[in-house]
Length: 628
Ligand SMILES: *Cc1c(COP(=O)(O)O)cnc(C)c1O
Image (tube, rainbow, N blue to C red; front, side, top):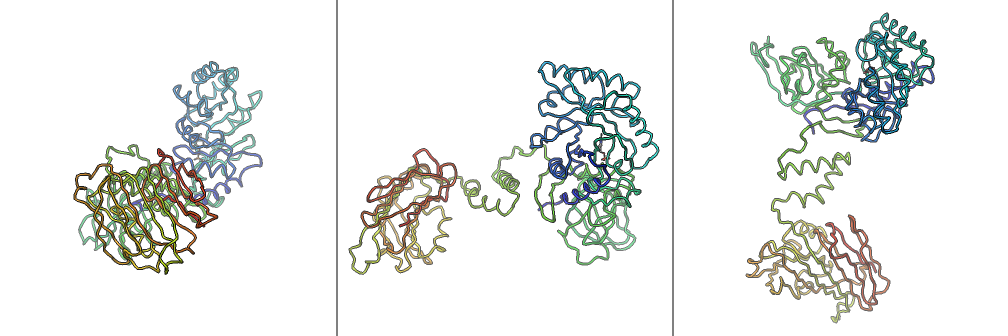
């Protein structure tokens, strides 16, 4: 559970993308702009979705952003929109990015670099038609273009420009379009890719010379201007949410927040939310913003702090700590980024980037969460190697991979927690595990339906205490509890027809090294607990010792299977089942997870042997079942 998070609604993204497509002439390609981590939405997931929707290329701000997408496995063309610096050339080539060219020196450096390596780099030439930012100025553009064209190791694949005010200034946009078109007319031959439109221009400024449009803001569900409301249906992709962390009230005349900018004019009930300008919720929303709590708009009161804000919930009943709060995005018109930023004359591009930086993201599609990405933290693993911290990281990492808290917790609790969390660091590894189970006919007349069973087990392990237990239970539920106890070294499940006691389960020999141990029997809630101890053991604690445990018991003939489980980390094992001539047709089912899943199985006339070499590790909860 998070204090605050963003939800990225990929279904809405797809809807917006398709809305924009309606405005395109057939055959026009789309480039999805994913600079600045896709305006704070997450470049990787947005890129994947855009490609699935038909985008043929991606636009990023710099080579680092492009490289990251390549790392993540994105293979479509990636155009670096901003002018690159010489030191980025190496990674442009390495990650197969397409640079844009705004000045000749860079083109020369790039050409040099490629000439030395005998490669050709595709480039897009940027022409400034009135944006006044990147790109060749118009009066120099033609000469520059022709010079780049002559550079043998560069290939001009595209030519482009950028509108300055396509969302609101129709005249200026028309001027830029005309100027660009005139420039194109001067070229003897056009490169395959010609583009000028950003997403607002897709709606407002169609042209007949472009082969590609570059879509950003509108695909994220933002109306760049009121004038396009009637033309296109856009749905916010990002929502920013948090939870109420405190509920308070103030009396007439009391103030709330820094510098007393809000003073109660009557009794107010208010909620503290655990987000502030550090989370991207702009400081200028002080006394101006709105949030949504169970469908009700609640005004922000007082200053936005770094990590907290206050909202007025007077008149709402049934509001509680932990209740979900929507700060931006879906849920209400007034929460749309363009409406929130209008409150303080801010930029909706900016607030999306700001919010995307700090919050954890959940990607949602058709109503369910399909992926998530963690907070962007520079110092992910600090110099705190405490168990607690490591456990949190490990558990979070598994969860991240599996995208499921439930499965992650299962794996973590079942397998890893035993290794990582238990307070006393003494984890028992067993080595040279050797277990023999021998079936024979019983000599006792009433027991003709049972085999006599003699088991013998030896292994080495660090002795943890000066005693341990051997247990024998009558049902699996009872036995289960003993799997969790670290002071139990041997467990047996007794047939239900027998009574717990020496007659039906007995230790015939038990030693640590050569020391014969004392035993003490006790029946506790359906289980025979045999305490094994000796005064000499105290001196051996923490040393690796050899355990030898032999038992005699009985096993029903009609059971048809015997199982041996290894419930601790074990190195090397030999498990033998000796049945003389009592059984024929025996099968071994082995359950070994991890790398060594297939033990050596050898059969002789009277026995079957399962071997894992001495140096091989076996994960807990492995085992074999002999079926006959
Ligand atoms: C950011 C950017 C875009 C996308 O603009 P929107 O208004 O978000 O659609 C297109 N082209 C270039 C060169 C850009 O830098």
